[in-house]
Amino acid sequence: MKTSDVQKLYDEYVMPTYARLPVCLVKGKGSRVWDLEGKEYLDFFPGWAVSGLGHCHPIVVNAIKEQARKMLHVANNFLNVKQAELAKTISEASFPARIFFCNSGAEANEGAIKFAKKYGSETGRFEIITMKNSFHGRTLAAMTATGQEKFHQGFQPLMEKFRYADFNDLESVKKLVTDKTIAIMLEPIQGEGGVSVASRGFLESLRKLCDEKDMLLILDEVQTGMGRTGKMFAYQHYNLEPDIMTLAKTLGGGVPIGAFVVNRKIKKEVLTAGMHGSTFGGNPLVCAAGLAVFKAIKKEKLLTNTIRMGELLDREFEKLKAKYPVIESTRGVGLMKGLKLKEPSAPYATEAREQGFLINATQGDVLRIMPPMTVTAKEIKLGLKILGNVFHKLQSKKSEGCACSNH
Image 1 (cartoon, rainbow, N blue to C red):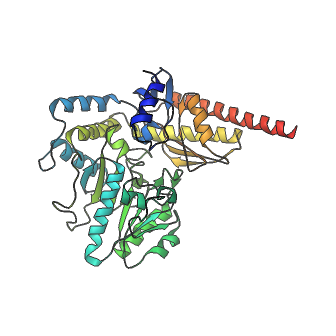
Image 2: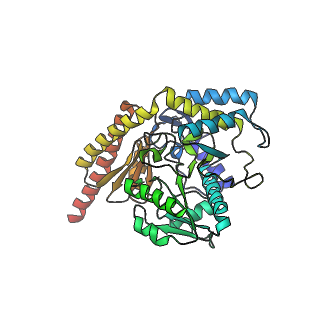
Image 3: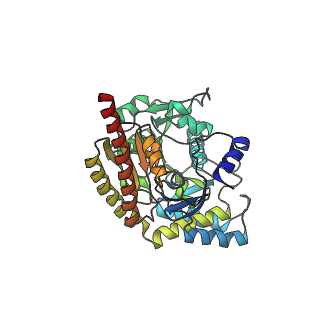
């Protein structure tokens, strides 16, 4: 079978909900993937950040193999050793918490929203403030929480009472708070929003505001969590704890798992038996994978590697920026990086793919670069060398075009 054959099957049988690239990936190992024709790629945006440990990390693969031989699924009205152990592990790595397991980031955010609404129901509070340019998922509540109109088109009426503030603008948030507001929800770093980092003053002021008004601070760490920023969770860069944190992506090392983590400082029971559920959520297979992810991060000192490799990326970016004025700025923390360009970023991501380097274009003019935490210095230098070739090629073409038009 060739890629064109697979494309035909997609055209006939698969709903066209993604702008699919003409590449069929069939194998992955670490920072590298191979397509159906055998072409090799250096992957610096592995699975939309799902494969944070790289593709097919051996510790995760072995844990999945071992668990698959014993039991794949247990109904959630029975006890499940792996789920209990993973809940304890997450709590010990973050803050004293109770955890609900689901299958994705959207479901985790949906659950956090549901929790907040139930928490506020006794006092008649139900409004939730989120941020413009945020992204929280594709389910109805998560999509409504997403502060980007392009995701709302054609799905009106949306869920009521979400209000959108300007990211990193405390006064913008304060203006939206009413006696009906129950929660403020945001990403510590907006991924889909162009790798925009929450300032220390902004996030810590939101914590203070929530404390003053008995509102919940919900941090969407679906993309930033599990070591991506050099800390296990991005909130740990700030002097605060969230009331609720949502996780997914790297948590499963490649298999589908999500979770929302509720701080034990919320004393009252909010969601009790029968109020929320997820048939597949937290099954033994995915929880075994999640435990293996924590094991690999610790055993291989991946938080330290993330910091070191992030610093190396920054240095390489500065060299690139000095050479190509089309790069307006660099941003990000750890191995969650963005290059903001002065023109559309999509052609650069496309050309990089042609040259065997996988990165992502977002927000029109940002290149999102998020290599796995296992990435090596050699791989980063190779990736940036390819990216340099991409900039050279596209900028040269542009110069030639200008010269021709002047002529």
